[in-house]
Picture 1 (tube, rainbow, N blue to C red):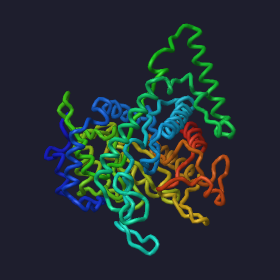
Picture 2: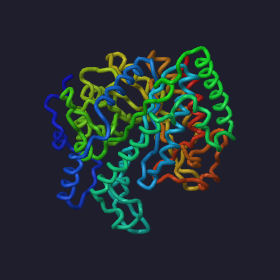
Picture 3: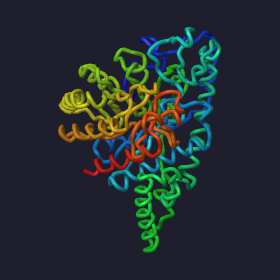
Picture 4: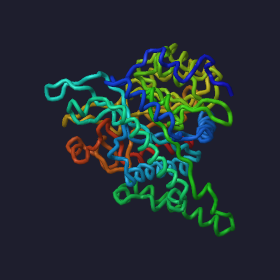
Amino acid sequence: MKTPHTEWTKTSWKNYPALQQPNWPNPKEVDKVLNDLSLLPPLVFAGEIRDLKAMLAKASRGEAFLLQGGDCSENFSEVTAPNIRETLKVMLQMAVVMTYAGGKPVIKLGRIAGQFAKPRSSDTEIVNGVELPSYRGDMVNKSEPTKKGRTPNPKYMLKGYYMSAATLNLLRAFTRGGFAALHRVQAWNQEFVIKSPMGRSYDRLAKQIDQAIKFMNTIGIPIDIPQVNQTQFFTSHEALLLGYEQALTRVDSTTGDWYDCSAHMVWIGERTRQVDGAHVEFLSGVLNPIGVKIGPDCNIEDVKKLIQKLNPENEAGRLTLITRLGTRNIEKVLTPLLRETKKEGFNIVWSCDPMHANTYTADSGHKTRDFNDILEEITRFFEVHWAEGTIPGGIHLEMTGKNVTECLGGARNIVDEELHSRYDTTCDPRLNAEQSLEVAFQIAEMIKK
């Protein structure tokens, strides 16, 4: 397959406006770090990327469902074996619920192993009366409100690479070394989830799966096979720091095509999806699956131009549009968008991000999201697709395997006064493991229709 954009090179993005890039104080130091990165091994491989694209092609036809989830912004200090295991565990639990109860294969795609940078509305912010550079994620600067900590440091990109490599190493060990085996579905239930309504629902389902596996074994169907003992887990992040992405973009020796080997899928955010911008230019030339966040102020003609530039061959599985519209806007915005893209015959994986447009500040001062709003947007996402005869193909969540109290509501009905007790995020509020499971059960009911 030829690269989608014949004039493209991996540096052609430099001829376009590049938003949300750090103000690095020393360009020569940046060049040295990027050169060092370009000599390091790829984090993921072209064959894995093609596997994901083939699965996403099935999701675009309604033959599979995409589960994409993880931290809003990863922190270097949180890259530990227990945290990685717990995030993987809750995604495995969700996937099992959605596959078994929903009757459809689930593609497991983490916001992990590279989600270390984040866009900001302003280059600077006022902290305690002092103007400082905004915190742009651990790959750029530190969250501590000091001039030294907030000064962008390109060496953090190298640290981000090594943190991503360590995370991927552990994820591969877990998913291929027995931890993800289906006969362990009951072992995945964490103590705090076992004691919850969702935990009990999951436990009942896990016992059914265990009985089915034992039955297969009893009648002589082999269960010592990869489909039972292993699972495929892919990684993704927002492709924000274009120098970093360029440094990890390589030619596949078997096909001669370009792939961004920093992750299996990369996406373009709402703030950087300009058709004539550097991010769209860069990602138009790599053959990874690409995601694009679409907010409530989108222009349909601009979205069509984005689709045509990023996926000119209309390849199924290449492009995922991740709508982040909010409960108040989803029907009004999504309906005409679906009608127009359906009329054009575009092959798209439609995914719902029910988190970002439902964020607000609670009376306690914490940034939060109401669980009912999240479920409401997911439900309306499915209903609009059903009404228009299109395919609701995936879900995109900010979530964690930890027992945090960052989003209101859910089965335990977290209230405003409880937000402070385990409000751990340095970025946006996340669903905890129990709330994530509840979402999975709700989606399972809808994807089997």
